[in-house]
Amino acid sequence: MKRCQTTYVILGILAIHPHQSGYEIRKTIQQSVGFFWGESFGQIYPSLKRLTAEKLIVPSSSGSKARANRQEYSITPAGHACLQQWLALPYRDDPPRNQFLLKLFFARDASPGAAIAHVRRFQENNRRVLATLEFLEPLARANNSANPGFRYWMLTMSLGVAQLRACLEWCESAIAMLSAPEAIPASNATTEKSLSATNKL
Amino acid sequence: MKRCQTTYVILGILAIHPHQSGYEIRKTIQQSVGFFWGESFGQIYPSLKRLTAEKLIVPSSSGSKARANRQEYSITPAGHACLQQWLALPYRDDPPRNQFLLKLFFARDASPGAAIAHVRRFQENNRRVLATLEFLEPLARANNSANPGFRYWMLTMSLGVAQLRACLEWCESAIAMLSAPEAIPASNATTEKSLSATNKL
DNA sequence: ACACACATGTAATTGGTTACATGATTTC
DNA sequence: GAAATCATGTAACCAATTACATGTGTGT
Image 1: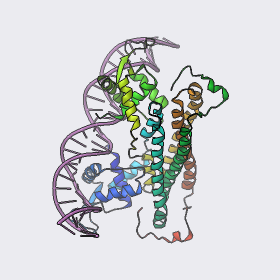
Image 2: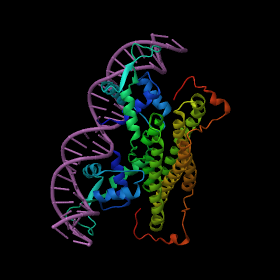
Image 3: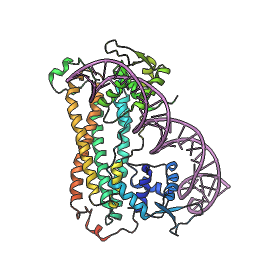
Image 4: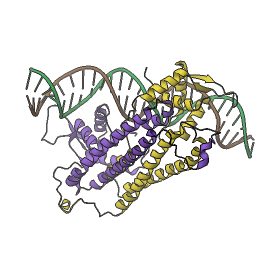
């Protein structure tokens, strides 16, 4: 049986946190794995129906925050087995598509300021995300450091932070490089003399 | 008029390198922007038809490598204008979906070795990509350093390398951390006493 | 003769976003 | 009573992958 990725995010979240509604599941996703994973309602609600039909989750109620509207769910043993099975499989890395890098790569065909504008935007985005991660980190640490899942959360966080820092450092040098129109970094002196016979760029 | 992303990759590639066939375009994509962008034939060929209909590219022939089969294309002034327009627009960063990080995040529900296996795979992938980038770099530098597009190619490359290095460093520490099952990094002494009342993990 | 790379395309399917539609509960 | 947030869902659309189908030219 083939299942889309949304399946496993929902199962994973419910395995950690039972008794959540579709609405809440989405919020939890945003707050925990949001910086590397997103789900839309158009994906979540149909998935909840399907997973219920497949007995991987069950409608449940925790009593407390009952609302006429709302339906919450919990993971079943079958659901947990399904999640574990998926976790044991090697992850697939889907071919990346980075529009920022694409626009930067083609920037010789753009107006002069375009490249630097893209880089600045990239820099701002990275700063913003880094700030939220660094804000979240001590809070989560205080609340969850005893939890068995904490170490894995930490690992994802630290990779995120490391990548963001690398990007921000790169932004500095990229802006510097793009601001000084003359300086082309050369590996040695002879490169200036246009060896470009068979261009690939 | 709304156009998919494939449009602009094709235009961008043909702006740099005219007289390429669909087959070649794909190859060029793999060799130049391959580490952050991919296109499939199922996307390229229909796009070429559509772009021809929209007069953004034209069927052309360079004479030399003519084949009964093959049809090559070049960008038109209209196509170039379209590309420039797109390049001037702010890039959109689509919500990332990193399956590796997702599996790592949920790893407390997996078998003990799973997390470390995922990390090792991630490490190998990063090493492989880094190796190809480092292999390509001096070649491209020698052939293209005089080219106006070279600096942008360099920028994308250096970001790629920086990110890959950051990931590889992280891999080291992640494997170390996962190999020593006891050590949970604590921010201070009191965190041990399970302050976890309101768990988020 | 065979394999491999070159070359082009279509059809089925999926995975996903976005917009739309609706309504309940809380808070100010 | 207005606004915000909580809450659920559907329909239309789209971008893209994958598998399939077919054929040509080159090198061994």
